Image (cartoon, rainbow, N blue to C red; front, top):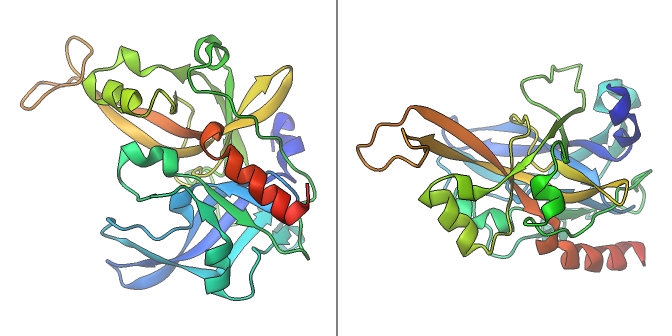
Amino acid sequence: MPRALAPLQDRVGLLITRRYDKVRKRWHMSTCTASCVSRHVLLTAAHCIMPTRNSKSRGPVDFSRMVFLLRPWAGRHSIRLLPRGKTAEKRRMLMRTGPGWRKGVVSHALEDWALIPLSDMTPCPATLRVHPVRADNPHIRKKRHALLVVGFQGDKMRHKDRRLYGSTCRATRAARYASRVRRLEHNLGHKLILHFCDLSKGSSGGPVFAKIRGRPVIIGVVSSTIRVHEGKRGGLSGKGGMSRQTERINVATPATVFYRSLKDMIRKYDGQ
């Protein structure tokens, strides 16, 4: 593990769920990233734990098999934390996601967050601080290498070497792209955090850090990507237009949209 990520080894972990594949008609294990935002609350993405409505392959989730691992590279010495609730239905009811969440629509990226309460018997050994910063904050938009995204990269994770990876990057503005992305930000009130951090499958739900007042804090959670086709003039190519380059912009759900729900859950399960 890189030395800079060592303090996160007891705060950011691997979320493992059992999901049904509707095409292959079998159950399989799915992995995401989650972080400890209090002793008894985890923060991740909604599409990591909730059944998707319009997906052709991803089916329901078996909440009874859900587990959260800290230091998964340590094998049997890893810390195993269990969500609260004795039954799968009870666990599902205790979890909280963005209202109206449904997968596959970029305009619902603001709903792609989830809070998972942990059992009293297995609390997080350490926690991370969440700070609600607006996505159009100049500190985030203008500073180079202002963001740090941490997660378990699927293309770098072997069966016995589930390492935590981090990538520094910068935030970007949708104004430099054409109508589709600009309309997206305009309709959402410029609330999404757009960035170019190095991500792959398995990083969903990972924390997005920024240094506020000299201290790294979580300002968002990894959600999805937007595919942009750049034409000759750098804009989005229309129907029948020639596009010379395809670029992916990563989307993060800002902490401002779930900060109140997070505070309520922390007060409920931690008594703070």
